[in-house]
Length: 78
Image 1 (cartoon, helix red, strand yellow):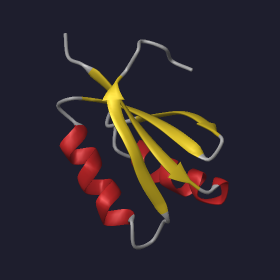
Image 2 (cartoon, one colour):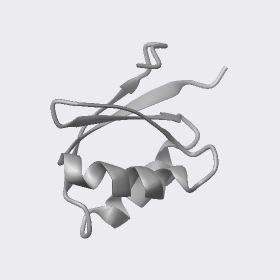
Image 3 (tube, helix red, strand yellow):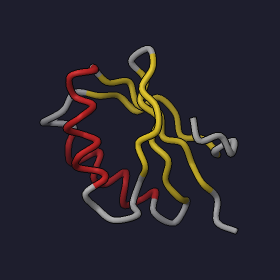
């Protein structure tokens, strides 16, 4: 079974909607799961991580965020 990964971003609340809209417009690329304490949790798979990272890096000039951590998903959806 393919690994699910959490990509954690530090991002302002005002920018979450736009980033979510862009990432979720690509079918099955990523799921936006939780925003808490300025940290947004994005879930993707190991095979799609490179594509997600390319999109995120291309958006850095338009949306201010910082990639905090990429780690294996614990199985929690929340």
